[in-house]
Length: 376
Ligand code: OSB
Ligand code: MG
Image (cartoon, rainbow, N blue to C red; front, side):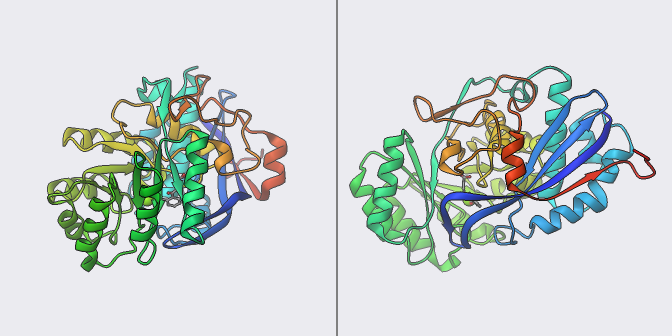
């Protein structure tokens, strides 16, 4: 693949409702959208999951833009690349910045699949035609509001709900949701909000109210506390922020700190690593599933393609487009189908294209990159 030019757009899109987690509230999502133009005439598209502020991880829109501008796009434009993973190898000496690397790698995957006239799902080795999904529910103003919100999602057809929790918003909302919906598949996600001294308390309320999975209660490096919580459990302990690459996954597996793996391509540097992590987890009998970062339809299409691989066995955090945004920026918004599923696009690449008008409306900045010295 020879990339002739790259366009980096910064968009701002209002969420249908604010999304509150233990680390903050998001009302409008700021995101970078990358379009690669190949010599073949095909394009490659991807979105960067870095948010406006470095709260989920150390990356943010501006660090990702700098990384792409200063290193990743010049490398990509300088010479041809045979596969997306070859590109990752080329930029491997640059430390960190997985979200910035991931957007370049994922756009290359889209381009690669389009050049082969195959869907991204097929290209990655996906088999499923539909993938099972759930919905992640932010912290609400009150417990009754939460119970109502969960009820609305169940009515929409979601069968698995993940509640965002934090100290002070845990046992009571979890108990209320469990009472209202006795059969619900109930997960919780704390985004590192608890001190390690909370192991006992979390284990108590999670088992008592039939929580199926507890995601990332402790800080990224607190592997031992996660291992402690995972011991003699009635629920799975899921890691999200702690797993940033193969080494951190192997460490967590070895120390028995993980019984479910949230895979976000943006967090781990792209689809190639995502696929490898799910395979390593499966080898240790740890199920994997695709996480979400409030992506638009572009990131969602990549996530759905990844979730179609056999090693992704738990319902993904990839909900219908309308759960996130009033207007989608892609031509075929994702709708929730029977059995709490999304259809895997079957067209070339990610199988969706941009709606120019919607992108133009959301665009805040835009820049085109060409090989240095190019007169184009
Ligand atoms: O921890 O999984 C998370 C959103 C932003 C940042 C972190 C997380 C999330 C979600 C949303 O839970 C999942 C989705 O996109 O539906
Ligand atoms: Mg999470």
